[in-house]
Image (cartoon, rainbow, N blue to C red; front, side, top):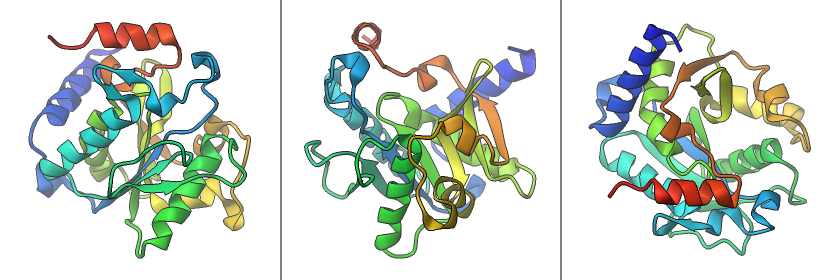
Length: 229
């Protein structure tokens, strides 16, 4: 990581921790939280329902979004892409690709459709996953980065080292919808990098604890053990 990247990462962490300056906003932001999948590496467990640090992984993300809303981040509706068996708090929308298990690209498409059904959707859509329980902390930095981006930028994503985290990003809704459902037909069983990587996306460095995802029981236990005391 270069010195410039380290400086930008420190700025991102500070912005995530403090009040949000509404002057930086680029418009309201709806959020799609992916909370499905097979949980294969978790022995088939329902990933959003896995408990660590006293909360379900999904609840860490949803509660974090409400914290941001309370700090002035211009959040609109929140939609969790999750099966009916996963309990959602009041006010959180639910979507699921049909048929289920179509992959994250199909999940994003389903989330966008559900948001549309609630009326006028926001021009920007954040994409997060429940298995990255601290990912919500990146949203203020992503909003600021998109505000500063060149015209024609379709979105901004977190970067973990050399890896672009397309599922921790903020996108212009029209561009995202066209990518995940070209011609209105949702893509299924396709690689996220192939689909979202075709967009004009800027990647910004993020702190490791923000992008950290939990795919195995060992990773869940390690994150639980690292909880602030």
